[in-house]
Amino acid sequence: IKNNEYYFSSNKGIIKTLNNTINTTSDVKLKINNIIVNGEDSKSFNLLDLDYDQNNIEINYDIVSAAPNNNYTINYRINDGKWETLDNNIRALKFLSLSYNNHNIELKITNGKQIIIEKINLYVNPPFWKKTWFIATYITLLFILGYAYFKTKLSRVTKRNKKELEKLNLE
Image (cartoon, rainbow, N blue to C red):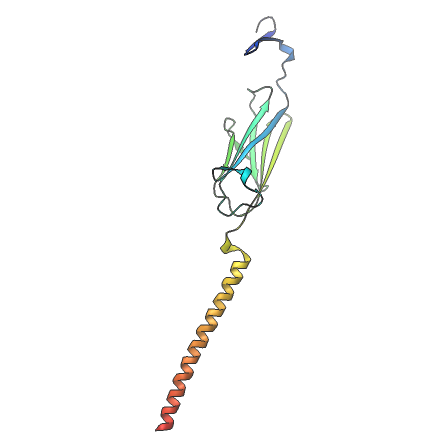
């Protein structure tokens, strides 16, 4: 700083600007860089149709601002729950073992009066053994096995009774 002027150096030379032209309350943008599912970039996945075992989610984001040294309040919430505060130096939000169902994740950056919210929607499918078709098949199979067991027992008892009746008739 010299005579109310700032000097900045860059690879293209020295830049001189007046102190009153620097905007410290500039617009802030929240940028979602990528979403990683089980260690792989989500570009190969449909986030609204994830398998039950694709439930480790990492959201990488950046805060874009003309005033990079400002501290921002970074919060997140999932499924309209309570807002949780994130460390200002970490630019990744990790969810390990998300349960199956819809998940609405919101990231919020607060910079004075400005609030930016980014929303991400995910759907993790239930495992096959918790799907309706599997439960119905399982119950039907149990019913069939129970019925077959009952019929086999009834057939054995009927044969035994028949033999005993023949034995009594012969005596």
